[in-house]
Amino acid sequence: MKIYKFGGASVKSADGVRNLEKIVGNANDKVVVVVSAMGKMTNALECVVNSFFNKKSDTAQNIEKVITYHEEIIKELFGENRVSVDLMIEELFSNLREITNQKPSLSYDYEYDRIVSFGELMSTTIVAAYLQSRGLEAEWIDIRRCIITDQNYREGNVDMELSRRLSSEVMMEKKLCITQGFIAGTATNQTTTLGREGSDYTAAILANLLDAESVTIWKDVPGVMNADPKKYKDVQIIPVLSYKEAIELSYCGASVIHPKTVKPLQNKKIPLYVRSFIEPEKPGSAICNYTQPIDLPPIYINKGNQVLLSLTPRDFSFIAEERLSKIFGVLASYRLKSSLVQTSAISFSLCVDYNEVNFQKMIDELRDEYEVLYNTDVELITIRHYTKEIVDKLVGEKKVYVEQRNRLTARFIIGN
Ligand code: ASP
Ligand code: MG
Image (cartoon, rainbow, N blue to C red):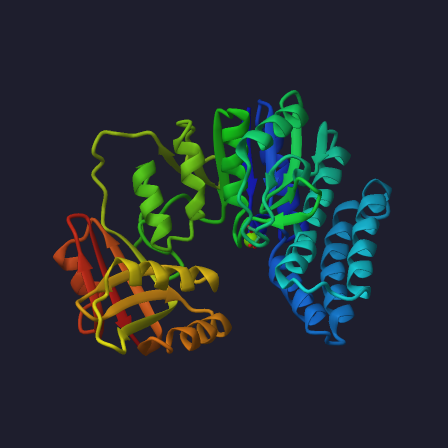
């Protein structure tokens, strides 16, 4: 069995869905297809959640935008002959309207998962119906009955053993399953999600649970590149990477795969292929259990939207273990993730992904004990396998706030 994952960009239009059908039709194997929400529908659904939760009147309008987007794709794919998709999709449309006609509960995160999950439910409904209309034996699977998490809404923790039993029962014998990325369910049938961009992670979890032969992520780039092709001109594809290299890259902010994707695959030595849905005949990149040293070019990642924070205890006490664990506790309680840390005797600097609301709340809390200084709008540049030339090229005369280097990796926090 193979796992294929298609992200939002690959199914953003009717042509995208047709292309998916060609790729899946050529698979010659049992396949579980994991699909994200179409195009930017997760962002659009986040707008629905926000207007609903903040009791703004434009919720209905925001929902109609989501519905119209899907309607247009359905019209193009099925024309007049849409009975096969209508029953399920109309039910999803009306469920979404119904939820938002009631009062929201007190938990934003709960409402978020309940609403945002419609993106994946709608995309997979359309994709499954289209594949069936083309004569493929595709079965729509509700992943919320297969991948079970705790109630940590917006970043559910997966119960692997329970999920293994349920996923195998539902999917093992089937020829072609179409299911949702990113979303999951609790043991009491509530909907959860695994964190933004989490569909790659879903594919990896399923591969682990079902002992798949491989995972292929179909993307709009030819494979794993040594830098972002949207930002740099002379980039090159990296044909083979070890799990270790891949996990380091995704952790540093390389958006080609979600950082949580590697572990479930590494644990079972399942290879991950990153291939182009535009040129599916090309081999792309393989991430696998490769232990020989591979000669890699410098790989560089720019991570924007960062904030650099410096904390100094007001009473001049040392930054020791106990303080550090408290600071990280505060960070976690606001769901802020640190991408780099540096300590000195009485000062602690860290770079975090910027989220205006949570960040302000967090520093208000830290100000009781610390003098807090911060710079917003800084960028974190990570260079793996760095050379002097590449550091000069990327960092050059720029204003460097923090610099860290080890044998393989150089990291710079740059001010704008
Ligand atoms: N649709 C979700 C998101 O945009 C999950 C994913 O695309 O992987 O975050
Ligand atoms: Mg997406």
